[in-house]
Image (cartoon, rainbow over all chains, first blue to last red; front, side, top):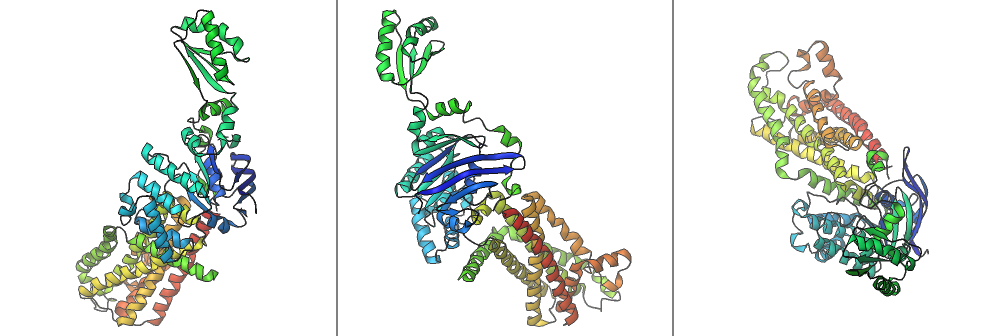
Length: 332
Length: 257
């Protein structure tokens, strides 16, 4: 058996002349927590829909849980759970009914489906409202019920498309904790998000995706290291002092010229802890005294901007303008 | 084993589809009110028409009763497309598609639910007819045949709405299929017997398949066991079902492949 839950080789998805996913390859190890990070329209959802058998690929090879998504879709479906971006529930049914139907469709007996539904409703804190129609649930409750539905058949691999979008911080924290728990219990988790802090908090492996291409992948720490180190930020009493400090500081900064914004001087260095005392000593001898000195770790946002040239909040308009519609474009 | 699983899937999806079509209960009122409304109004307004030749001297209520049954079936089965498009636009349809089931069971389960609901609503309208003084001359066996034909035609009619739902994924477009109810119901022998019609209208009535289903109902409610008429009604309903359910399945295949 493969040590990978997911193996994707040269995956391409085209809608007419538009390429939504452009020749991407990646693997996800069993038990990993993998994240796709990128702006809306970057190809994250399309990729997940192909992995979950909802959308037919144009070319490439995709194996999920060891099964080819085209040749053995039902084998794949038994192994996966997919929480889609738009919460999809039967609104004219109760929490119980929603979960039990999914249970029996995944092969559980009615008694087992009821038992499992009861357990999961307790886990996601919806036992008290389980008999009410879903239309009366709040957004956070709907998301939790949706997640419970995904877990009814105890899937090996979880796909989560923007699982906390639109949720308040408290509801988001509850979902995060539960996803960590599932992952610790052995589930492989693949999520898409455009929230940097979510990716940083949850994922052990990340892939930056933009315009249908994986720009870079690796662990969050490895990706941050690729920026070249930490940020050292010196704040002076005046812009004039900051300007004067450039010439003093630059020789210590490994070829990098610091950037100045008003009275702030900022540079990226590999070993900020070692360089900072030297910078202060040099500035003192030049009679320049910074009001503060800060050393910060780069964020994933910094890395994304450096690699892609725009922030993750900027949607890929080329995709939106073309108005992609997966229903019209076909799926399986 | 696979067949058993398939039947099991259909059973659960049928139960779910039936629940969906019966909820919320107040939404069922128009589909029962409209046939009852037309029955009461027309049987009062056209009382004198029975003096014309071709009505055999029976009351207009007796003549119009099968139209009310037909309308109950139209109104109940017309909701199937709406229910489907709601599933599609809400994403629930995708949830069913990623379940390890035979996809066609989604449509079959829904069709069986539609057929049952059409038969039940036809039964309720028959009860109203009986309460208003009407009769089912073929008795209990005739009633069962009416419900059977009603269920079959309900499934057939629902295929139109479901096809539009699958092709457009749009609620308003699907809802617009409602307008088909008017020509298919009224360009028939709904108001007058065929012998009193003439010209292009008579031709249009004879070309309308619903005319034959209506006449089968009329045979069972008021004319007695006219075997040929009833048989033709079933054959026409089956023919329409082949066309509409066939187009539903083709559209479904296009959507999911």
